[in-house]
Amino acid sequence: MKDLERAEKASGIPVAFLMKSLLFSYILTVLMLGVLAFLLYKLQLGEKAVSIAIIVIYVAATFFGGFLAGKRMRSRRFLWGLLVGGAYFIILAAVSLIAGKGNIQMGNSFFTTLALCAGGGMLGGMIS
Image 1: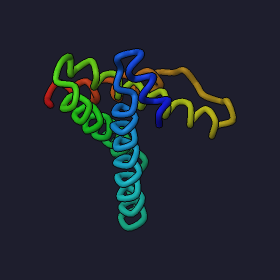
Image 2 (image 1 turned 30 degrees about the vertical axis):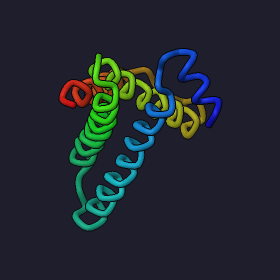
Image 3 (image 1 turned 90 degrees about the horizontal axis):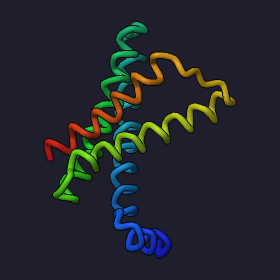
């Protein structure tokens, strides 16, 4: 923890708080994905409905992470929200890359997901 505090002082970026915002976003993601799995089990949702729900989950998770970051920072809130959304996407892409054994495609959905995560975080920061 002291390394994070030193990095925060050296760079001026509150690394520990940004990590907490990301952690909150991922906890929220896990909870919402659990609800989606339950609904999928009970209601036999179609593929299109599940895809839309996953997009909504990404945007909602980054929105609330950006909202928390914006509340804490007080200035340039949109930028901090964008940073949270971008970091969320980078971690998401890295986990997908590891889970997919290095087989990740850089198609339209890759960049759409990047835009949704970054935009959700930025919107949350702006509204905070």
